[in-house]
Length: 167
Image (cartoon, rainbow, N blue to C red):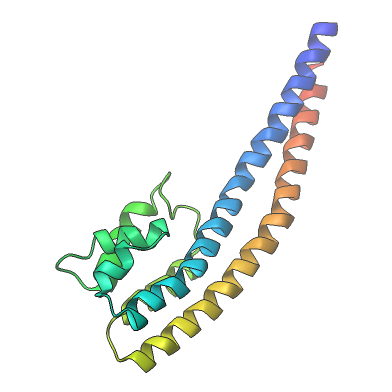
C-alpha cells in the first residue's frame, strides 16, 4: 500500500510537469518575438546608417531568425528568403514552431517591404514593425503568464485524478 501511494504521488508530479512542458511553447513564442523586436533597431542602423547591403546587414544580426534569413538570401528577395526560412523553421522543433499566425503575418509583412524602398519608407517600416511586434510580444507575455499557471494546474489535477484511480 505505501508503494502505491508513493507511485501515485510521482504520477501526480509527472502530470504537473507535463503541463509545464505544454506551456513551454508559450515561453518560446515570447522569446522569439522579444528577440526579433530587440534586433530591429540594430538592423535599421546597419541598413540605413552604415548603409550595408541587406544581406550583410541581416547576416551580422545577433538574432538567429534574422541571420537565417540573411543566409537564405543569395539570389532571393528578403520575402523569398523569409518564406524559405519560415517553411523550414515552423516545423516541430524549429525556431518558429511556437509562433502564432499573426506573428508570422507581421514578420512576412516586414520582410515583404524590407530593402524595397527609400530610407524614409524603411524608417516607417521599422517603426510599424516595432510597434506591431511590441504588441504581439506583450500579448505573448500575458498569455504565457496566464496559461503556464493553467496548464500546470490542469496537469496536477489530472495527475491527482489518476493517482486516486490508481490507489
